[in-house]
Amino acid sequence: HQNEQQHEPPTIPEKIPLVSNTYQYITNNSAFLKRASEVLSSKKIAKFNLGNVPVYLVSGPQYIQTLLRSSSSLSSDKFILMVDENIHNMAPGDIARLTRDRSGRHSKRPNPGYEEHPDKERLWAGLHNLFIETIAQKDATDQLASSFSRFWGQKLDAFPTGERREMRVFDWLKRDMAEATIASVMGTLLLEMHPEILDGLWEFVDIALSLLYAPSPSSSPALVRWIWRKINPRPYQVRQRVHGIMADYLKEAFERFDREGPDANADWEPVFGSRSHREQAMFYKERGFEWGTRVGTSFGFLFGANSNTIPMAAWAMMYIFRDPTLLQAVREEVSTAALMEGGKLDVQKVLALPLLQSIYVETLRLHVALNVTREVVSEGMVLNAEYKLPKGALLQAPTSIAQKDETVWARDGHGANEFWAERHITYNKLGQREFSMVGRPSDFFPYGGGISVCPGRHFAKQEIMLSIAMLVSRFDIEFIDWTMPDGAPSDRPAEGDAKFCGAAAMPPDRDAKISMRRRT
Ligand code: HEM
Image (cartoon, rainbow, N blue to C red; front, top):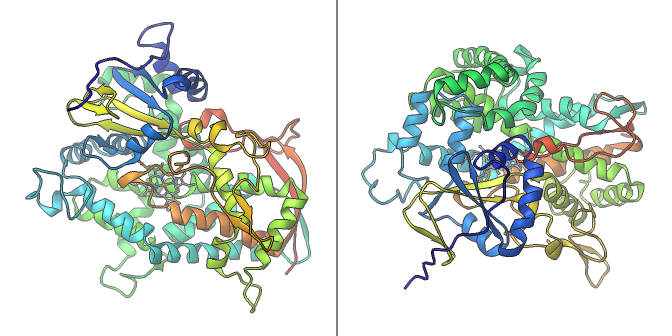
């Protein structure tokens, strides 16, 4: 017997019915969530309409566990399709193929009714497998991290020993860390052919959220889309420009690459870079996706590999550098992971460092703001035996509410909104630090969850921790001042740039000027 009550959750009020909430959600997600969190505080669930789609926002472990658990009633495909259509500009025919494939992501257990579905048309399962095998599995992650250390190491080695240089942290990482990431994930050919892809990437990061929520072919009539583009041309211009660059590179890459040659299975080669990018490029080609889709998804991978990790590394470095005592503690901790020869670091030891892990978690906790989204795909789903949700409704869990919940995170006078490097640290009997995460998986989910959880999460963690560890072990660093992004003086420290709320990483809206000197 199910307790199918027909009552509705509280709704988020709005001035103009069916318009105000949608408009604010899209144009100022941060302000919308601030209002929503007041409604959420009583029942942990609140309803509003996004266009003509009912959305149920949830917080609190009970609902979030349900949302993050894999279930046959909830699907994350819709969100990925929105990204495919609006961000990657995937061709309509390819969107239709993906939409038709309802066989699920499990390669061995297709959804009921799809047991006989031909393997070739199991697109979600094919991609899911590819991501697991080439990004998420330990050996794949280790390969990616090892390529990243090599290229990041080269960037650091390019500083002459002993010379002092003034840099802005985020500005510098957007160039050097992005180049090291692009080289390790996509190869060096792209950067050689088109170094301007770097500027294109950061311009794209700037407009990605407005593309995501723009009217799309599957959601709106042609006239609405035409008007929208007339009013907001920039996102489309930026997308067209970066896709033009990618198309030129991808054509060359396919011409140069020998599928039967010695590099066919390499962990890294210059043309496609990582095995993951190469296999994705081959997957979309061999499964008959259109050229525009292949270009868009290739750029999508470059975008996904940089747009979150680099702002997160910048935040973590800013927190460390502004506090000389913390910088010293991190440097001492990192020195315990040094190998005997040549001052190199033992990667596995770096990843286990308690203080650095605590800093990593604090950074993502405070600065990843996205609304993890699931679509109700079965008729008459009852959420936790309380609310009946219609098919087609969306269930969303905002990370920024759960990850800043005072009842979960506040410790020793350090409120949830504060960065506190030692929040996830306990001391053992010998007085040594141990990493101990405050909060449960349902309180901290910057990578989503369930079967669609980010396959890059282990690599992202390694990249962020390694970039910091390698830097502090080789350089003296002094914080000078906060600046505007262009280097002009700023009267305050960095804050999360609210216009990115909902996009995942919220980059700092200010930069930190530091002075760096290479020691060894
Ligand atoms: C701090 C860094 C990162 C954050 C916060 C992040 C977050 C996310 C989130 C929230 C999703 C969607 C999960 C869902 O729908 O439930 C996702 C998907 C994905 N991420 Fe990440 N990510 C990060 C870094 C990376 C990196 C470094 C890579 C690759 C090198 C990567 C590759 C991917 C891919 C390929 C998907 C799509 C998976 C699919 O379609 O099933 N991510 N990421």
